[in-house]
Each structure stands twice: as structure tokens, then as C-alpha cells.
Amino acid sequence: MPRKLLLPYKSVFPHFRAPRALHDSLAMNAARSGYRVFSANSTAACTELAKRITERLGAELGKSVVYQETNGETRVEIKESVRGQDIFIIQTIPRDVNTAVMELLIMAYALKTSCARNIIGVIPYFPYSKQSKMRKRGSIVCKLLASMLAKAGLTHIITMDLHQKEIQGFFSFPVDNLRASPFLLQYIQEEIPDYRNAVIVAKSPDAAKRAQSYAERLRLGLAVIHGEAQCTEQDMDDGRHSPPMVKNATVHPGLELPLMMAKEKPPITVVGDVGGRIAIIVDDIIDDVESFVAAAEILKERGAYKIFVMATHGLLSADAPRLIEESSIDEVVVTNTVPHEVQKLQCPKIKTVDISLILSEAIRRIHNGESMAYLFRNITVDD
Image 1: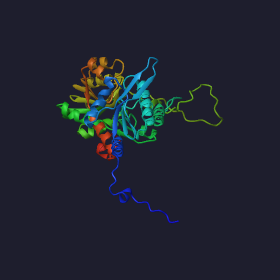
Image 2: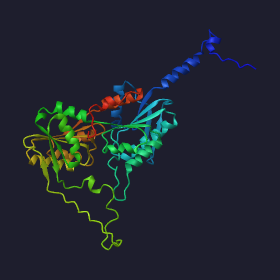
Image 3: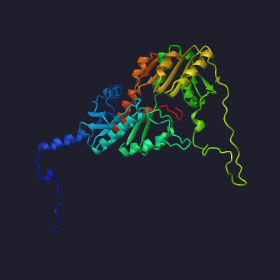
Image 4: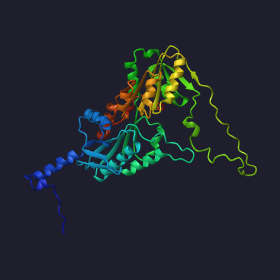
């Protein structure tokens, strides 16, 4: 029996018109292929950055409710359809880090079960980034968090100035690690009138690469403070001190390993000339400010007449505002990756640089499938 030839309906029924319901369905599918931006926290301080981003994108913030029940559990309710769309979740990390993480995980999972096409987390400050190394029977918590985010449904992350760039390797999906340094460099050039007479300072040898990058881009001198009293991350980095030393430990006959000499920090010195100059201390995170305050005192003793501190993430925990106000630091400049409006009210020395521009452009490019190379122009490995 000969096979029937299947022809397009237009050739068989030239005057056929699709019903209105079909046109409406196609229009809805076109709308669903767009994107939505949600905030994973409903408090005013945390939604400020999300509102700035959506204003730049010309979009509205997605309708959702995030709240804590009386027993402390987090509940998330998505108030609109997200089927087939690219969803961007903006989560700034307030002081209650663990609650913020749960809000992000629960919202991502809610969007996943609501059939969102892609779920992209916009996490300007990535929590637990300092716990990215094994330390004396501890755990690499940052790796655990990366696995949890993937399991919850995230397919991509946009973040800024990870504490360790190697953290990107913890994820099973793409991570765009943007840089805030162009905004901070612009602030130095525009807001510090005599910046040509400045010197970039690393408050410890660990921060020397970042400071060197700033110094080379601004064509300024470099100074490094060496011999700080507190322990650095390298002192306890990977658990090789485990198990603890025991005086009468049993040693295999004939096995005598050379003993590692204990570290002894030299007296505090400043490598580089800061006399009669503006000192600009740069780092990625400013949390407990004791080390910055101590560095400022040393720089004052060495002749620096004005001291600025520049950092991407202004966590400013505990008594940080009071300590800054009482210190020799003239100004602390941070970005709005972390909400710090309360700290600014307590200390007028704290200034904010807005980075919503680069985050909104990253969202636009990812949704449109455009290259992200433009956002990484002239960025090197050490930046």
C-alpha cells in the first residue's frame, strides 16, 4: 500500500488561520523565554542592590516572599510564573550568614521545581570563602557550600573578588569572578586629589600581589608591612601539623624525619618609603579591623600624613565602626557587595562605591549569550 505524503497544513489548506488561542500560546512562550531577577532576602538593606541592578536593566524585581517562621525556619514563596525563563537570584550576605545561605538554597530549589530554564546566583560576596583550605582536622566548608548550591539547582554563579581564585574549581558549573578594582581605582583617581603623592600599601606579604597590581596601574610606589603579630593563613594551611606532637611517640626504627623549624616573626618593619605620602592600604575583605588599625598606626609613625583603606567587601563586624572612628585611618572605601548602611551611620569615615553597573551588565550578557570578555579587559591572574 503506498505511503501517504504528509504536506504542511498551509499547502493543503491555503486559507487556514490559526485560532487566537494558538497565537496567544506562542506569545506566552516568547515571553517565557525572557528573564526575571529575584532577591533572596526581603529586608530593605539586602534588596537595595537588587533594586539598583533591576533599574539599570530596565526590569522589575520578581515577586516573591522570603521570611522566617516563628520556629526559625526559612520559607520562600514565588508569586509569579518562571517556567522556561532565565532566573537571576541576587543574594547579598548580611550579618546572619547561615540564614542567607538557606534563603538562597531554598529559593533556588523552589525555582528549580517551578521549571525555570536556568537559575543563576548573583552572590557579590561569596560566604565561607575564607574556609577554602584544610586546617587541622577541619573541613573545606567552601567546597561543601558549592556542592549544596549545585544540588539546589543553580546552574551558574556571578560573584566578585573571591578570597581565593581557586574556589572556582569547587563548582561543577560556570563561575564568573568579576573584579571591583576598576571601580576602586576610579575612586582613587577622582576622589583623592593628591593621589599622585600616594603609595600603595600591603598590610601583610599575603596582600602584596593585589597591592602591586594597584601600584602598577596607578604608576605609584609600593610598600609592604612585614612582621605582623597575628598568625596568617599560611601558618595553618593544610593540616600537616596533624597528629599533634607527643613527647614519647613511637617512631619506626631507622625513620628519622628532619624537624621543621618553628616560625618566628621578625619585628614589624615597613618595606618601602611612606614618609610624607598618602598611604592607601588595599585588600579584598575588611572584617575585623584590628589589623588595619595597627597598620595605620605603623604608617603614621613612619611619616604617612593621610591613610586610606580600600577593600571590595566591607563586612565590618563587631566594633569595626567604632575602632575605625577612633583610629588614624582617614577613610575606609568599600563597595556595596555587602549591606553596611548601619555601620556608615556609626562611622562617617566609611564610604561606598556602587558596583551594580558591572553586575547588571553581566546579567544582560549571560541572558543574551554574549561574551563576558569585555568585563575582564586587562585583568590578569594577580588581579
